[in-house]
Length: 300
Image (cartoon, rainbow, N blue to C red; front, side):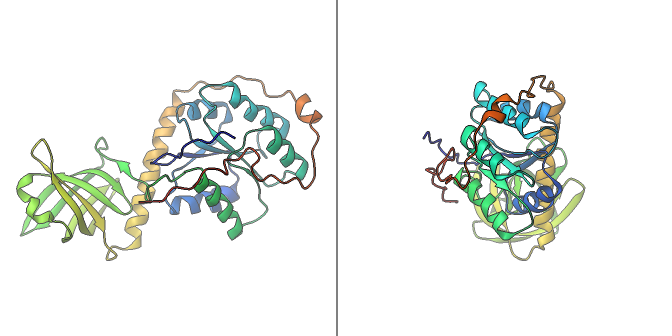
């Protein structure tokens, strides 16, 4: 079995036509735990998005839009496109029977597995996070980080010694920020220093934050940069808002991408192959079309 190397910065995770249960329970849980999750609602544009996001994971809800036989053809077609063969596919269903699971598992490459879902359970969340971690969804990072250098609704300043000092926010996460500023105030950002009264604005919200300076360095252009980690003094609402802001920004990029993608005109209605497949009850799927030889990466 071919094994693909897990990426340092993780993989994007797409859910195609997720049900309300998946969106409100699984996807919400994954977002809270810093997985980079996206929702796609039009299968006719899904391939275009995935082709532009190689090595992503995509979980397809086969209960809506098309019969199972047509979804089978849709997913099999990924192997025919060089732009899609790197996508890690998975199936989710609340209605499929064991015959359908067997047909998909034995005939479609499913590194993401086949998930039969009937209700909200801790086991359901454990199964998803296990398969995501196995396939390097988070990579080595613990927190989802957004490069904000080209974002116009992010800014910052430090209030100290009765003055306001401008900060340029380079990136942001629910764990902290990287900021640049004029070198003459670098003494305010000495390593391991507790810095209060940092105001960060993101979107429509301004937050006064307490941070520990993780490190500081002088850049080639003569400015200085510091990495600041949020302390436990900050309310959980601050981290939640930042996380939601990052997901909203990432989602807007996919929406922009979707506007430039032509709808897929391929025909997936041929059901002869699916009907002809013979299902085997109680089959052992360990190692079948799943990357179980890939070890999860340690996070830093």
